[in-house]
Length: 287
Image (cartoon, rainbow, N blue to C red; front, side):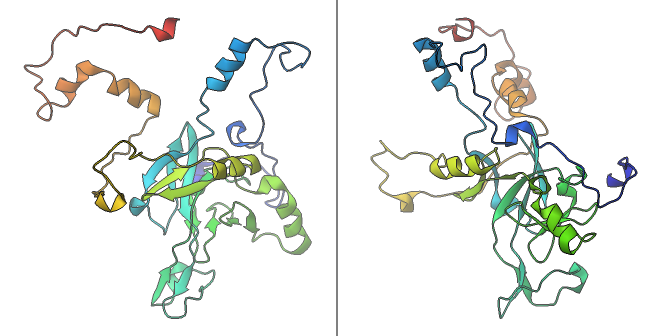
């Protein structure tokens, strides 16, 4: 609960300097250690090849959720690579006939015959830059901004601070000029009905994400498929599991649990459990 947060005694307008999460910044963490960055010290070719082969999970598109299951009226929290993120849509509420935005105001006073525009799906670090409150407990306002429920600060879809109700004029401009007042905004794309997130923020991340295509199933080699018109997309089936990918992978490769935990679906817990015989053909992890 936000009310349980311990509040230090200082003015609400006093801006607390917060250091963004290291994993979301443009800081280059790939510099070799032990002086290897010195151009005068040769780097073995094998070491260079090994470095190039490493896959960076923070520099790729990751699928998050089918957008048809997301609610455009409120922010939704997610866990991605150990990071708390919040997903929301910046579409403004507009008049059905004119298409004009109705502007900021209480939802209880929203005029009839309105609709929320399509907007763009956004992904922020779930942490208010002001006092670190979770933005997922905030609100998507009718003007298409995201409001923090602690002090009502509001941000635009690109992560830039838009409104501080406790400050006006030069004081507001001073706060907005501080880059730490902006949210860590991750690049997003919608492909085949799925929201994809690039789990790194910053200008370099935006450029790299635009240059990197979203992963999708290749139809190359399938001679009986001529075009997408012959592909039938069925309903989405998914489960939101309250743990990370590492626990999930460990569960998947645990063959002994299948007949027990999935009794009556793929096997029987009374017949199938038996000793497993595994032949290791490639001991890569110990080489």
